[in-house]
Each structure stands twice: as C-alpha cells, then as structure tokens.
Length: 191
Image 1 (cartoon, rainbow, N blue to C red):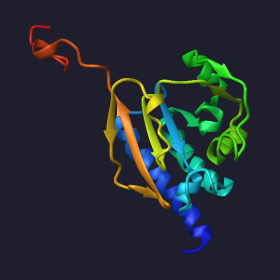
Image 2 (cartoon, one colour):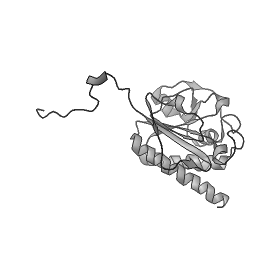
Image 3 (cartoon, rainbow, N blue to C red):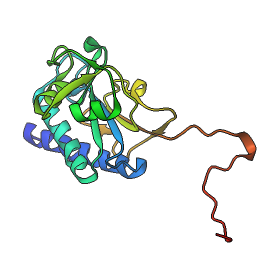
Image 4 (spheres, rainbow, N blue to C red):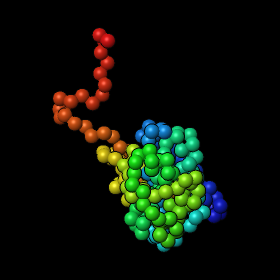
C-alpha cells in the first residue's frame, strides 16, 4: 500500500469508528466527543516520537466528516506536555462553561493531532478539563479523565487505525436506588 493509500485508509477508518460510536452513544448536537490520538502510534512508532501533520489531517478530517452528519461537538486532547488540555471551538468552551488555559499546541508540545485541530478550528481555544459524553482513543493516549461518569467501554468493529489500537467509551448517568429502583420509563395504561 502506498503512503497516500495509507493516509486515505486512516481517514476512512477514523470516520467508520466515529460513526459507529455516534450511533451507539446517540451523539447529537447536545453531546461532546473527546478524541485522544497519537499520530506516532498510528504510524507504527512509539508514542511521542514520530508525529506527523499528514496523519493528523487524515484522522481529524475523518472525524469531522461524521461530526457534520450528527452535529456533536468535538474536543481533541493534547499530549502530557500541555497537561492533556483540550482543543475545542470557543463556542463549545462557552457552552459548557469550561476553564480556558493559555497555550498553542505544536507538534512537540501538544501533539500533531491537537496542533492540526487548533490550526483548522474557526475560533480555537484550550480547556483545562472537560466531561465528555463519549470518547475515542487512537493509540492508547488515556482519555478516561475527560469522560463524564459513568464510562462504559465500547469496542468498535475496527480495532486498529494504522498501527494504533483503538478504544472507545460512551457514558451513562449513575444508576441509583438499589434493587427497588426502576431505570427505564414505565408506560401507564391509565394516562
């Protein structure tokens, strides 16, 4: 497979995974999806050693293709050099009232994926932390800290993008009340 074919496959696989999770997690314009990704791992290298903007572009644009269909909001996790801050559009930061932090991701401090997202958002900014409704991790970058309680693991049909293993999660509200509690709405015949 040529390098260009590999890049195209990354975009296709990313879109397929996001579409599958969007259906499972019922993502819509009221929901936030967090993405963690190591372009180094996708390229078959050790995390943080070989990131590229062409892999980042394929990944992010595949994700955005599905976002355009479903309307959910996006946040892209930076690497640990920026304390795992999250790149998002300013209207998303304002909508959720997240705390903004001051930094501009670059490939060696933030990561290639976060850098590409920041460079291509209309009004980019960074949030310190978030509580997303679902998340996808391309390359085991550890996104769990950015998910709402309660995280439910989800294993997409496509388990690798490039050479990077893919994990995902959706969230649900905590179940409270014990054995007497009812968790699904009841339909009453008398109404």
